[in-house]
Length: 447
Image 1 (spheres, rainbow, N blue to C red):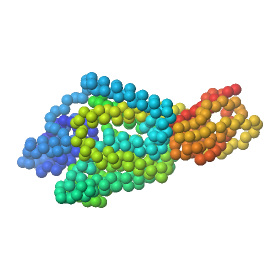
Image 2: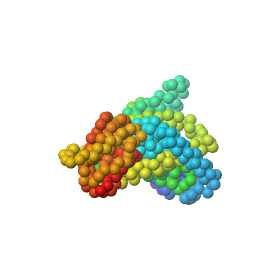
Image 3: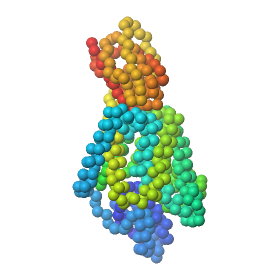
């Protein structure tokens, strides 16, 4: 047995490692393969008599890469055209977001242009984005490998018959996301994350989204070497390999689709965190199911999209998606910081019982809709009881959860009037927000 090291160009993530490892492992005489996208190398343990350089080169090429030494990627791209394109795109996207916000259309998208959706419509939008941008190196490769093998075995089959593996894969994926999303929601309900934990998770999601967006813009080539991913051994055990298929099986194909729940796509991870923070199996299941449905068009067309992967239009489209994702991430960062601020001093995660009111009552009224609260600024006197009446007119929005940390108010609003009472004991600003920090307000306490 001998050990050889192969330099490989083009690898940048764990998915790349799996693709290369899978192809090299199938060669005769190869006993062990270790691949690293960081060192851009593959180390093989194999029998000396089976070594064939042409076969090694061909295997690497089948995985989508080339043999040879990779040059160190720069932190900033030296391509001035890329900077110009991204600058123009950023300006246009910014104007677009401003226009939509000015016209009040953002609630129709189900999100306040952040990485955290405020409704299932927002989850669907993120799914559509993920389906045509990231999460495709491995998931797309799986679909292509399974479909290609099936087509090879059924050359005379009709078009409808040939797309059967894709349909089975996608059905398995949606069902898997439904079941595992419910599990995440259940775990969230058992753990009962505090507003502080939720704010930290929101900031983590925003950070992932920022990284994804910057990778897509192409402005920072070295960022392409960083990815959140499964350990190779775990991916192998789960069967998440791109081309090693011994035969088509409907059950195996559906199961593979379901197991893509564990494929390390940043958008998927963001939605998984969001599902867990809901603390509800039903909400968790719906969030992950709608997200999976959103990815269907992009993943189903991955074969066609790969045809245009080298075209100028596809590269420009990728940059546009990157800028949009960064914009969403920045708003999500703001939401996380809002929630972090509103969560300060929070002691009880349960809705407090109404206190006994004595003395003059200060009544403040607020309406909660899909796009936030109206009004969202109030002034009350210190030491006098406050009766806070919130008329919830849209339950399918993150604005329907309310947090006033100082007095232990953390509740999901029911349709109609919701009443909370407290007595402010100190002058100053009482910040309140929705459960995700997207919509905020303040109650000013004066002497």
